[in-house]
Amino acid sequence: MTTEQLDSIASKFDIDGEVISYAPYGDGHINDTYLINTKKRKYILQRINNSVFKDVDLLMGNIEKVLSHAKKSIVAYGGDPERETMTLVLTKDGEKYYRLGEKYYRVYVFIDKTVSLNLARTNEDFYQSGVGFGKFARLLSGFDADEIHDVIPDFHNTRVRFANFVRTLDKDALNRAAECKNEIDFVFKREKLCGKLVDMLNSGEMKSRVTHNDTKLNNVLLDEKTGKAVAVIDLDTVMKGSTCYDFGDSVRFGCSTAIEDEEDLSKVHFSLPLFEVYSRGFLGALEGALTDTEVKNMSLGSVMMTLECGMRFLTDYLDGDNYFKISKDKHNLIRCRTQFRLVEEMERDYDKMLAIVDKYA
Ligand code: ADP
Ligand code: GN1
Ligand code: MG
Image (cartoon, rainbow, N blue to C red):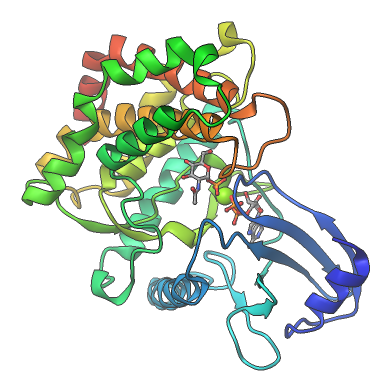
């Protein structure tokens, strides 16, 4: 977007201070994010991806309710509600977003003096992210699930994700299947696994909760100086789910020895020491709040979230890259390969993962 376009959009919001600059920001795969710098403070401006979030009104309604609940809880324990969660900046007309034709925009206060990481610099970073997501789960524990709606139905229904994969493979619209034979076989071998967590949730064996559902490391901000967890961001997918999804998705992203789109697979490994660090952080922050079934299935959640994410990258590759943002050729296939490498190694280390979770639960 040009500065003129950004200026015109920003002017619709209740922003404090004259704007000095706009810059593309962050590494999210879904929304277009910009940092706004004004003479007084900084903001995040996002163009909401409305091909992913089809009902923007519903999405922003959810976010407003979650933020309001989170802020009350933060105030109740004596925390800082402007720093420990996000703050939505309304439009000058008091709306949660601004619509221009078929495009939708929103603004948040920028949570300053923090970092968002794609790879933990130290074990302590990853431990802190576990503490952050664990605290966030606690913040939401008193939140009534009926207050919010499923913005993306079946988001972590891995069986439905598998069916989507098969449908896309059958079409093979761009004739890409031939080059993905190994990855396709990899998924088919694990078809049975796809229904496991969903069945437990449906039968009531697994507790349904309001969860974040996108708990990767770069969705938690750490204090620039102390490295301590400050706030969980990217609340677009807060919906009903399982704590095992949230634990599992953090493990998927953060227990890798390499970034999500590393092309050199010899660098990509599942790290048991990092798994232990995360278990200590997340389970420690949730001490006593989890059911036995949740504790027992944290490792299954890790395998499932990684398999599901790899399958989603593969599906998107076969479909012609319509969902995740890409910045290079075969980007989604590269991402898929790292995920499947991690799944293989988690399967190898599964008993050790179970023992680690047991130790910290
Ligand atoms: P996406 O859905 O595309 O992942 P996010 O909402 O996660 O979008 O935003 C992308 C990135 O922008 C985040 O990973 C983070 O680095 C940064 N970011 C988003 N919101 C804030 C905020 N309120 N304060 C500071 N950084 C933010
Ligand atoms: C997307 O929005 P972002 O980049 O934080 C995706 C997640 C995937 C993740 C893979 C709404 O997360 O589900 O796990 O990419 N978000 C959505 O990195 O689909
Ligand atoms: Mg994000």
